[in-house]
Length: 327
Image 1 (cartoon, one colour):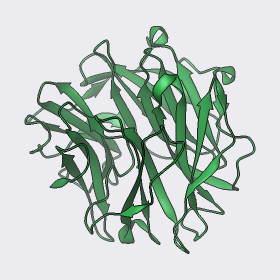
Image 2 (cartoon, helix red, strand yellow):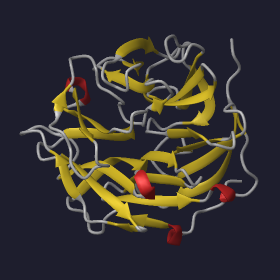
Image 3 (cartoon, helix red, strand yellow):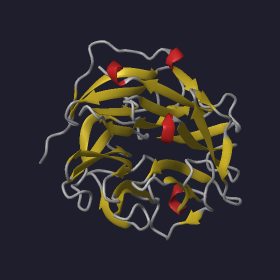
């Protein structure tokens, strides 16, 4: 059995200054919002998307988006709305051929989701008509997929039934035109959902996922570019059953954004690792009472890390961290 991933607590907590973050929109166009995603566009602009309406699961919940140009977020616009049905968990990413994709889910609950997607060939200025995916395919369920060379995409997916949870991986070899599904992938106890996939080296891939019973972040490994996966195992990182995201930096280190607690959705933290096994928490993004959750994270071409996350279910917050500032 492989050893648990271990975490070393930092000797001194570092708290993010409020001045380093900004709201994507203030006020927001809807009273409630959640589950953001972020992508870098050509030329260095950013685009974020999220779902928003009167409340999660209500029929008026639509997918919204905003563009950040020259350091300023532009007014949000509604990207897609499904008739009389709530939308959920948008994910933005570029496939290897340069197409910008927006995947999302719609349905009255996660147990009844249908996957859907739109594409853009002009960096999000215009979008194709929404395409509903075949039953059983969801696309990236919450976190961005891993985009590899030669048209390959490895996407973390999951299924939440009424009695059990399981992670799946959806894999494409033709720039996302078609997908093959692999799984289920589960830990010894309970279930996991919403995997965030990174490339360790070569064909060795790894995903990190949230757990509904173990109060720990779980991990699974693939040694054949995402075709087969090990049984999920628990790490020492606490998990309150809330979303996480992970990136493998260009300098070889790993960064995770997550709630460092077994219960509740505060604080929201960053941890860094040299090997993806041993983690050191080094920055607290939020520590006040309230919900700070469902983070999305990317590393831009200039090395800067961009994070978006839910701020008290009222706003979407964006934080920018220079690579040199990662301890």
